[in-house]
Image (cartoon, rainbow, N blue to C red):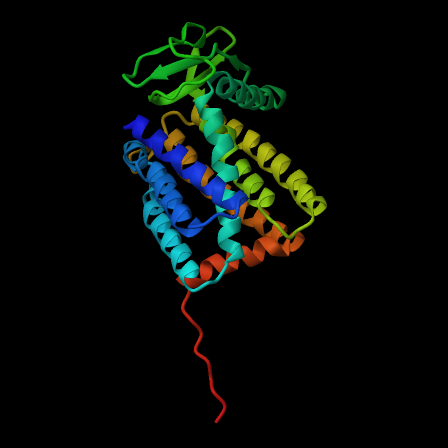
Length: 306
């Protein structure tokens, strides 16, 4: 299944990248196939998030396929009518420049472990600096698809490019106490907020009218802010899990509640507020978002003069 998902991702990104960067014949058909392919990549991950009981990611992954089909259909209809839609072109570039770096990070083990280590060391630094917990990092490890784990130094795959399926943890770094005892929390690639940051990077790079100076200014505001918020998010989840290990509400542990619900809700609110700031800096971004929402909004009735 993972090999099929990877193939869908490669095909989808290749086609969307081509139609964004080059003017070619039958671009609408090629783009529609790209949308279908990349949406299948995300959609096929739905069962995994169901197993994890992550409602936010279940919703996003399940909705990706119907949305991909709708966008592809819209693209074909516009070409039949002889129209061009700048917002759809922007969306193609946004998906291409957002998904490509993230998938590259997840497929290159050395890069993935480096990002995970960089994320973990900062969370531990915050906890130690504030006097909350004297923790350190364990050695990097990898979880295979059969649930077994090993040290990353003993990884049996290619550390420069690995497309085989891994377990839920993938490449991870456990958080341990100074005496080497595990606290039961590990940092994985998804804890890095790379997904959130790269979405904004793709959205800003793909703008075609806004000056680069304004786009760079927006990037300098967005990326550091998301990163620092995520550092405190990770530190907060570790603190809550350690302090309220016996807490239980509706069958959820403190880690599950803080990680899958509270932290994700806070992240969505933060991204919404950041987007509002970016709309002020880059009106083109706001215009594209509104244009993409038009087909899903009720049409206003026109009142004719009598």
